[in-house]
Length: 442
Image (cartoon, rainbow, N blue to C red):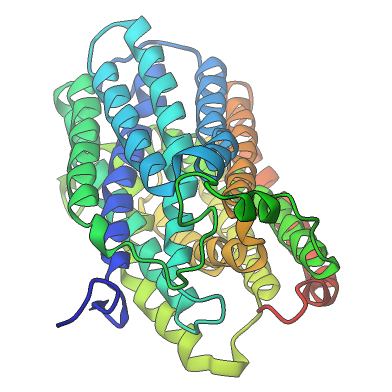
């Protein structure tokens, strides 16, 4: 008889399926709400909203998205020391659902209450569900990066579906119906998470903060406070440097929910082949590309074997494709600025294709890199730091998007291009140093 730990899912531990769908529905709720958040605050061209100025809306957007990831640090610590990762994810998901349902109430206090609840819940859920994925594999398991790529496909399946549903409900029916749909998605994720708990079996049965709820024995307490070895410090340094560069990546990538969202709503033609659609549907384009190409990347990393690029090289590729994406759309923004005519939607489709290449080169690899380089006793904390960088990147993204109130789209996109291009060059120079710090980990 096959035990829960022996069951497979596309050649991976069966527990990956449980986490795949948990994250899929959590990201459905997050990206569904995010697709209409700034449009609701400023008022879409298709439906009135709160009527906030662009600068204020972008500032709120940046603070919110930063805080969502910033809470990953205390969320990771709580899981490492007290709750355990399974319970942290469960409690976080419940709080997230409450937040979305709060935003479904047409009241400004409930709007901000909902944002606060989603921040708290995501801080518990987001870093810890990724950490649980890492426990399904041994540290040297060659399936590890491929497993995170498949997990990432789950993230983007939710991100693809949600704007189509929440965005359409929000812009064509009622903003609060869109927020409520996001909450129902999170509830579905929680139901299947609890049902699939038995498959979340770690590859190693050795007790660590990743696999127990609390430090119950004296031996574990001693292990948790033991000093790091020189090799562990070098690996922590390598992870920290790459995490810093990921901040720059997210600052550009997260323009999707702010400046690029407004560019789609105000400057892009909202019809293809005679069929009109809500501007929020552009938020589904990049996740669709991710779904299509995630299996390709997962296959590619395994197929390359020893020729597979190192994590620092993959990060460099991610920044390179991000810079190209903004360079591509600058001429379209100039045309809109001078001709005052909406541009073809294919400009944004091309941009999101290039950003997909960058995201698949960096983000799932980054999650895997954190679990490989981090000492087990601070795995949750290091995952929280990774999401802190994402959060700071989101805040920078909101700050840059706020420039739209007084500057043209082309200026904002050029700032994003030059920043990403400079980071690409610097990281290219640092690749040999980072590889030495990783002490054999790829």
